[in-house]
Image (tube, rainbow, N blue to C red; front, side, top):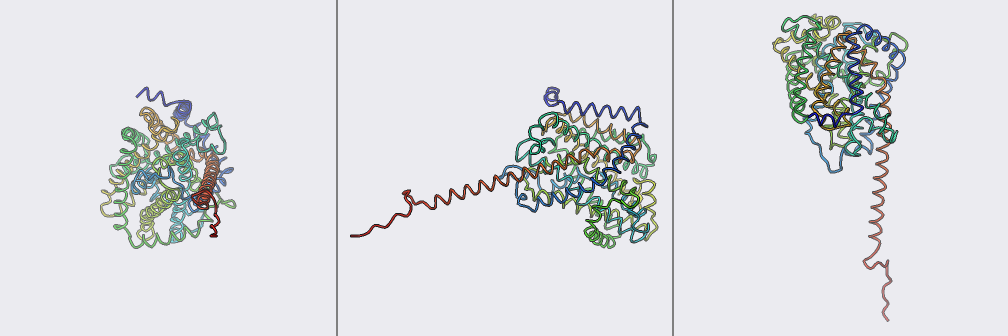
Amino acid sequence: MVANFRSQVGTVFWVSLVFSVLFVLWGVFFTENLSAVFDATLGYVVSTFGWIYLIAVTGFLVFILYLALSRHGRVRLGRDDERPEFSTVAWISMLFAAGVGLSFLFWGVAEPASHFGTTPYGLAEPNTPEAAALSLQYTFFHWGLHPWAVYAVVALAIAYFSFRKGTGSLISATLRPVFGDRVDGAFGKAVDILAIVAVLFGVATALGIGALQMNGGLSYTFGAPEDSLPVQFIVIGILTVAYLISAATGINRGIKILSLTNMVLALVIMLFVLFAGPTVFLFETFTESIGRYLGELAPMSFQTAAFGDGTWAEAWTLFYWAWWVSWAPFVGTFIARISRGRTIRQFVVGVIFAPTILSFVWFTVFGGTAIHLDLFQNGNISATAASNLPQALFDTLNSLPFGFVVSILALILVSIFFITSADSATFVLGSMSTGGSENPSALVKLAWGVVIALFASVLLYAGGLQALQTATITAAVPFSIVMICVCFSLYKALAAEARETEAARRSILERATDRLGRPSGGVANPAPSRRK
């Protein structure tokens, strides 16, 4: 094991690890300074680069849809005769669990309820039917096509260059068509280190949110202290041991089994809430919210609040766009790993549309139920979300029959999502820090598993949810520039392959035409003999 560890690690691993250790020490011993630096950086980033996030993320969506609909959609991520390694159900389960599963439970009620009480950009009177419609419209916007397009760009590039071109699965390898051999030197290592840093902050944010949600659930079900750092640290510690054990079993066992378990349990809870709650209202809400989302998709995609207060956009849309970007190298690498053998068109349909539809259903069921409670039963869920976001889910579940039992199941689901997200992250970080290894050393994964837990703990200690959001927005700026370069590189490589394919097809056609035009003697069109 030690020999395998030594053979895999190099500059990228050690530089990334040293950065991680220094950041953790900064957060532990100079907490106030860390918070102040992040707050100052956040103000600068939002005021200067906020518009870049909006244009870039929308551009990623347009780009990935173009590839699926163009001639490039037939290109297979691997050899032309390869077929997918995982079934469609297992594939969607894994990308869903690794991508956003942990956050679904936290934001499923919290976001729609928050928008219901404080409407986006002040577009409606709070706690009214119009506010209810807006809340789900913007929730769909934040969890729909845009985030999955961000993941898809990185995942598709890694899968294409790794499985079809054989150039490796590192982020730097996807930039070779643009930067050439420079990706093999210091420039490439810097890009890979930048990707690792983005992953650390993105995953730490997700796990920190998971710890907050577990704290809220334990407080509701077992009377644990609310919003307690010791409780959150204990949760992180216990689940860290669990996901390190899972990571040791490998991707074909640990992550796959837990992801399928996630999907089944999440489906059971969702169906229970759907049919135990206001079923007809939820179906009507889903239909109307889809229409509003599609109708307002373009205006929402470019809304910056340039002529008003941008506080809401900073707290929600910009945070989400930065979060998706910071998660992109992590989720993208993982999705690429499980997508070998699919065509680009199949990949885009599976990675963008399937999770988007699942997201819409999930937020309609949980968020719609909370909104129905507020509108018609004085549930006051929006007030709970304003003061205690993690508690909003459990207050909603408590309004239903067997609410206590369902809350226990929700706690179990949060735990499993926590484990699968962190398990996937240890694999991805291990691969990224060891030159793209498909089987990183157990010691490498152990090291990153501990670092992830420490990052989440430090950010919670430095300011809870606000610190998590701030760190994500600031860390994602440089990687968004990398992603734009990835798009240019991928298009350049696909265009070159298309030209090569077309040239080969014409060559074959010309040779076939030549053979058909010559008879078996090698003499073309001999004159018939004349009888004397």
